[in-house]
Length: 312
Length: 236
Image 1 (tube, rainbow over the protein chains, first blue to last red):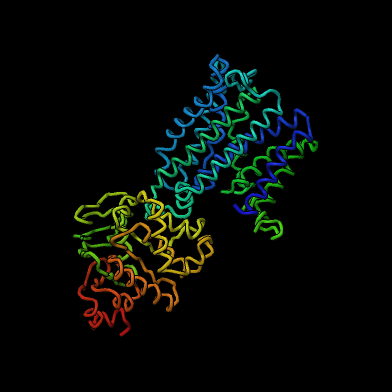
Image 2 (spheres, rainbow over the protein chains, first blue to last red):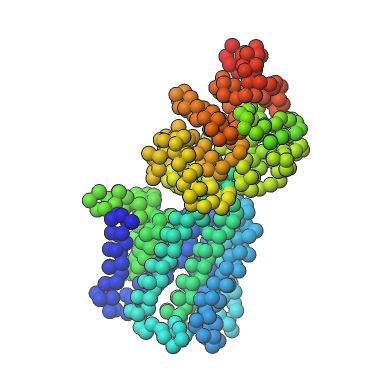
């Protein structure tokens, strides 16, 4: 680790930890909590999409599966500690069912399959009303509770989620440095050359897709039990496209990029709310501006900073 | 060691290989020469498992490898360094090379040994070790592609047009390295080349492929003096 590695990291951590000292506004902290959860989901999306180059529109549905599994299970009286495991089992199952037949094929089958999957999940949530609460969602979901201990209030949740995000990012960084990470990039760059180097590309794609689903499932689990209210809107097809936009704007393949994109695009609509209907115009222009001016995403701008900033 | 028998390959209705047979022995450099569209790349791609033959057999170390997955074939010591270099631009030079070990479980020390060997052959790559693959010149990319193929510890290396798009002096360097490897490690090489003069110089034996059939074969030095070869491939 050199200065250019740990300096932005340390800066980010200090800023993140100081935020609750600056504002005690519950609305702001809750918005940040959602931003952090979105960042975890986008980090997950980055495996299959940013590193392996597979287009995945199912990430919002995995997010929702984790959230609804947790909401339904805890409301039915299961102890909270079981819910991360339940969520992981469900999203892993779903991702294998989707991934096994489609990831053998090159090209865009995963994109089409995951669009369909997102719609199926949404329809189930909306129509299975007695269990999922339908369009009005699930309210008063029990909070995080590990043998009687759990965070109280928005700020404690905030710190917990920051720690989870840090873990999620460092695990992603470790995977990128491993042989699996190299296999992912190799598969994206040239599937044929990757196979000729001995990489099992089908397996690599499937693992990346499944890890991404697990990230989303766990984020969904934490969403349900820290926001305590879930509804189908939070996990719709629009949300899937928004997650993809976060990844592109932040910077495909870049871990800081995922976090910047997710946090930025979660907060921006709220910050622009005073514009009323016009906020969408500004939002759209902003996204286009980033794509045109910094095709590598916001994270790529760091590499354009002068040397004294520690990045090159 | 590698034995191809009556191999036929078609793209749709067009038959590209019309029943070719040849073999490569242990530690031998064999050249496959011929013009554009003769089927040279198709031959290599079929051996390495990227294409399925319509008939014929490919036997490698005594086993039929027909229908085996590409990534599995690499693990048996048959490496294919594809045409057009196809390195991984998003990985560093070091990562590109290590990806070449993906077919088997290596101990860390073995990987370092193999890296050292590649860097000894291509010192230029060592200078570029942390650079992204995208930043390399054409010649460096070719060295990297060969280096990556060597990292799988092949006993036979299939090289497709290593001279493509390279400056003459770089071509010479690359061929020198190939011969050096062959002498030092007993690596067998199946060399596909349009640069026939170069190929015949380094190879012991050669085959001439013309529109899907082998029309001539024999010792490289004899072929290099054959009037038909001189006229068609060596410029008279």
